[in-house]
Image (cartoon, rainbow, N blue to C red; front, top):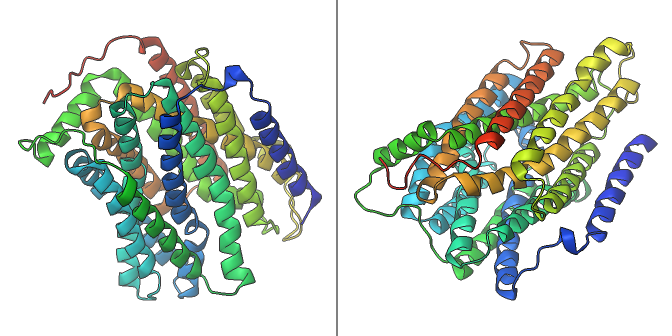
Length: 448
């Protein structure tokens, strides 16, 4: 493997270590022992949940291909997952608000474990059922756990600022360190121990089962709106009213959809961008490098959110602009650097420049997650939190399904340009959110 990859990985690792070790009292939040115990319990569970998710990611496509399915059939399976998340996500989000977030978190574990079990079957219909279950689980992962955390944090009377500490640590661990360790562990199971491509899914099920046991033994239940006279349709209507009547909630949803849509599109684009002529690139090592860049971003976010200035609404404008510029690099290098005509071989000079830009984008992703979590905790009403958060994911899932269906219809530069434009629009919307952030919310709790 080329020295360049090690240099980038080592430089990012050194910066992350320096940021974590150089934190001063201004960068740290003084908390209570009770909160630290609560935070550590949540971080343990969240890390186990993310391990169950990250272990599967690198091997889904590979597993389907070993069963003999082609690109078109595999694409349909992926579309089924995102479509399931779009169709059922809002329903399970509403059920989480009404029936309990702890129960929804347990449902996530059970659903994802069942999805892992289906991977043992080479039958297309069984795998399709697994993708549908996985889509439902994804909706719960990105709504129920955060909703439970915010409600439980407030119920226990902890300071609001301490919530940002839990968010940043959750992203640092769950979306950074755990992702790297999961990739290495999956590689150990499949390549070193030769246990086959199903092994990571079995390991994921084990981690999910351990996390479920901790939830059942140590978490208490909390609700959004548990009133029995509200059916699902009424909850949907209330969430829709909240989004349409409160500009801050609508802006937040649009910003989230634009950024996450670009982020998920990037997941499909970075490999062909770095190896347009089938250059030999270490996919696993590059993935670990991206996750290290994400850890760098979450470490920066924890410093920013520990201070009263700048506000999250302010610095996120800059983050969106930087992320937009970083995804323009493939377009710039395509025009300024002569493309290589050699098939295979090492990564090109243009590829090296793009890799640095992609690491910058991943650092922005690391800042985005805890920051958007903090803004959601401020602007989304508690009684419909999970429902509204899953409403936000509807345009995201539609966008990703369209991209997956037409991934070969457009040149890769057009796809990157589209993502860059979306991110720049997100920065404009973020500026508007900053301007109105101090205005009181129009939507009232309980309004129908």
